[in-house]
Length: 101
Image 1 (cartoon, rainbow, N blue to C red):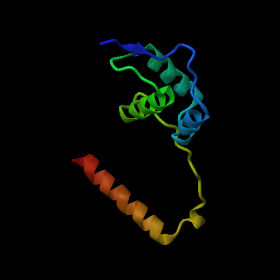
Image 2: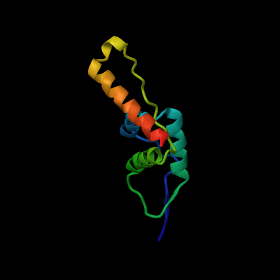
Image 3: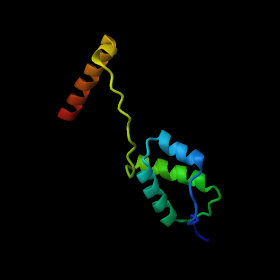
Image 4: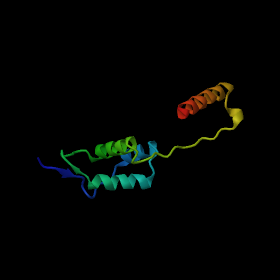
């Protein structure tokens, strides 16, 4: 069985780049993942390198090789409802209990 490698001149298309942005992947992390993907030797020949790239990114996120950047949205305390505050306190208490075990 013949293995295959990603073409050295492959660059992700706009759809793949938009996917990375939506997933919170920085340009630096995307370029690093692309370099790793290009170095990988695939057992099965690939025909859609953009799909392969998006799957590579998903797998890297899943296994912690890439950590997406989370946008932090700050809200003034007055913008948070009483119900939201109560829910946050309950979640925090549950987390503290789990960590205390």
